[in-house]
Amino acid sequence: MGERGRGFTTRAQARLWSVYSRCYDGLLDLVPYQRLVAQVVDALEARPGDQVVDLGCGTGNTIHALVGAVGDLQVTGVDSSADMLRVAGPKLADAPVELVRSDLLDWLRAAPSASVDRVVSVNVLYTMHASDREVFWREAMRILRPGGRLVLVTTDREGVGPVIREHFAERSFLASFSFRLVAVLVMNMIIWAMEARRVFDPASEATLRQECADAGGAVQSVQRCYGGEQDGVDVLLVAEPVLDLAALQRVDAEAPAPALDEQADTEVVVTDTMAESVDVAAED
Ligand SMILES: C[S@@+](CC[C@H](N)C(=O)[O-])C[C@H]1O[C@@H](n2cnc3c(N)ncnc32)[C@H](O)[C@@H]1O
Image (tube, rainbow, N blue to C red; front, side, top):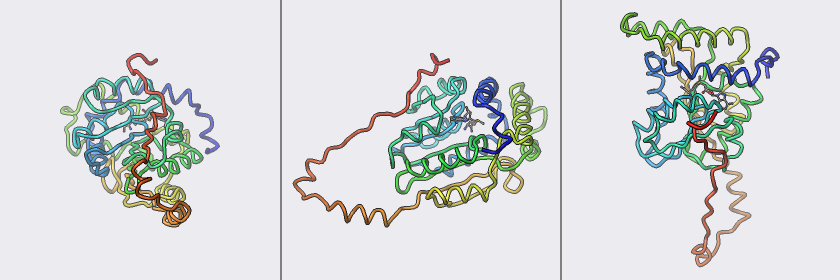
């Protein structure tokens, strides 16, 4: 944890997300956010039947777009803010989605190994300090199945300029105006001011790459976004778990394959959901 980051308590963050939830979907009026969501959906390359978890799903915009694009998915949205989930609930009412109110690290720690095909997390990691990011990377790689992938978006640059420029390159001021969009821009300026004061401690692209490698992940691609391919304030990183062939060979050597008649009796154990699902409407 960065020294200056310690002052910003979990309770204060919870308050921030609660206030932000009231206008958060004003982002849907912002061209760079629309593009970002589309880029994330493309990068996920999810296939029908995949199990997907969105860590810090907020008001469910990524899940909504993903289910709209791919359809038949099993999606879990995890967020610590009941107010964010309360906005997500009605939006995702017809989708095969489970919304879970939980700290994402707690959820990850409790999830079975190799149990999901896609992990996505958009603009959440910048709020976490280095020691928590370490847990995030390690656990995300652990829960991914072989061939699975993580799509991570996080900011590594301060400022609102590139986002506003990208938006107004497409839309006139009058065509853009909505009160919820103005409220969102104010909230974003507050968040960016916090970054400038090191309340949040965003990692650089190089640090993210290193953290991914340390956790047993292989970075497949990194692209700049949310404000343009050059000046964007976010990075979109795609990573996959590296197959530990040595470990697999050890397991093979230690556990010889059962005889064919024994295989017929193999029991399938279904692990129950590990984190508490919430009735979002009833949750405080
Ligand atoms: C900027 S919003 C991003 C929401 C969404 N991913 C999107 O792209 O629209 C950050 C979200 O992360 C959630 N969040 C922050 N820290 C979290 C944590 N440790 N566990 C679970 N959710 C968290 C907040 O409640 C908030 O909904």
